[in-house]
Length: 116
Image (cartoon, rainbow, N blue to C red; front, side, top):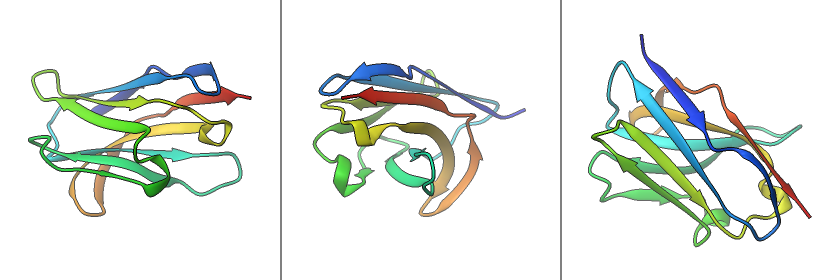
């Protein structure tokens, strides 16, 4: 059974930092990524990373603040979020796929709330 389990969400003040983790089990993924969905909005892409970690992709609004990384030995992907803003408040989802827009598995999400 394939599972993606996120952790690390919570409540933080604006300007603060959080580190999200997503542990995968049951298989590995050549590409792993993070998405988020704010209340009343569509799910949006946050960041993605290739198997080797040599290629990373981030949404423009998050570049310079969010960093994606992975530890293949632990089958885990991370999202370091710095300089958080209230508009970063959302449920953050981990996804596993094969690159491009091919996302096959999703986690259950972890809530991130940034207070002003």
